[in-house]
Image (cartoon, rainbow over all chains, first blue to last red; front, side, top):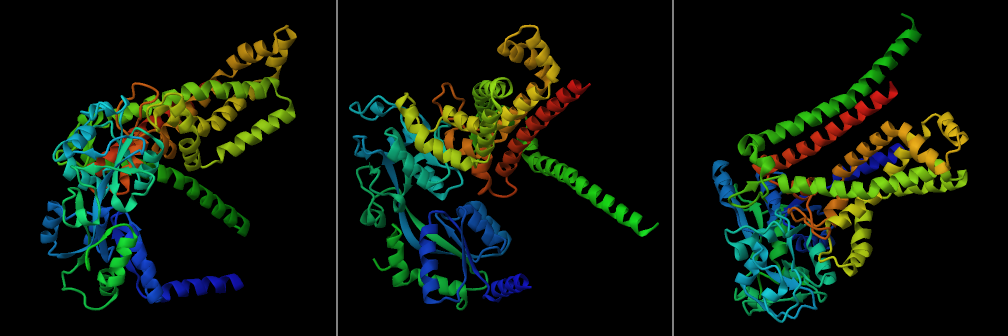
Length: 273
Length: 288
């Protein structure tokens, strides 16, 4: 009897919460969204936010079939998605919430400071395979090239900046997470990888790209080439929501505190700089 | 019909229903995978299975499963080369040489080993085994050999206990007869018992292969993730299972990419189906 009561209380307590706000999408934006959700929960304990990082494409397709309220994305809409919006008579409103730069990282033992986009392209398409092809002073070891897997928004942005329409060499290792890349670069003296600057820590060496170090200033004014805005998309087909959890989330994200949290997560605030 | 018969009938029907349910699930999985892979197969045709290049998200996509298929086969073969002799030796020792308490220890450690989650084996390999391989001359941290070592750890308990079972099921008189005729313990175990247990041993080999080729987590973590055909033990490899696990989560539903991943699943399922059929055939022949 007692067990049944406890179960009933649990069920009731789950359903009695206000309808949850669902936030889905890019893994890159996930750490920011997590911080926002935690802070919002502190300010207003009755709000109920469900977070899921599943990749930008997943977030946007969830927005189409109404299984999410907010879609985080680390890339702009694809032509096919804009087409689908027209077909379904929907309008998604993009909001820039932060800026991010993609850093190229190597092991600390590699005596290389700068890399050009064309060298990077040669490495990722497999034309350059050893370090001494970049600089004769570097060891004659094979370069272990790492990339995020094709579902990642970071992958798409990187290919856009570096590869253009060319294809990545099949010898590039596709890995599941940015954390894995960071770990590999720390342990393998011949590894090269790329990641959002929010993930870079002191264990790896960040290379200058075309002579520019990724930093807050260089990302904001786009002198660092591989810079990108991070978005959240909301469904604004029936106008911008002026009440409800979506509005609350939006207001917090763009508030002073929300933007401070963006910086705390390792990205660059979009507002108030 | 009295109460007892009704009760009995009801129970029978329940049992039949549950039994049919497992068949239904199998049929549904087969049907589902075939249905989902049809778009890719009909659009790409034979190129899907013969193409070496896998660029599913490129603006000019290519969906070639061949490199990953060969990767799957090679890593399975490499693992088999390591695990089958090891498993046989362990089974041989347990059957012919081990005292009951030794056998007990081996049996229970094997059982414990088989319970270790594959994700833990994967992490263990990356943190502890990969640095050793670096010292031995590996040029990359994740490689086909590291994956094969992980698969060996995973499948060794399975292989050893299946082989031991096969040898134990041979009639005891065979062993006693061989020993009585003056054969050494080794000779009796190796030439007489193993020969008699051959169908069972072959069955163990096939079931092991079946298990290795379907394993996902270890190869995803430890074998590299580059869809190339490995030329040395230190080269990375990306088996079909790793590709499915890596990409299925974020693929656009209903796209050709999605369908091609199911085609990869169909390939794996077909291999597993054939291996199971062979295994059934072997055990049927031996029971005659």
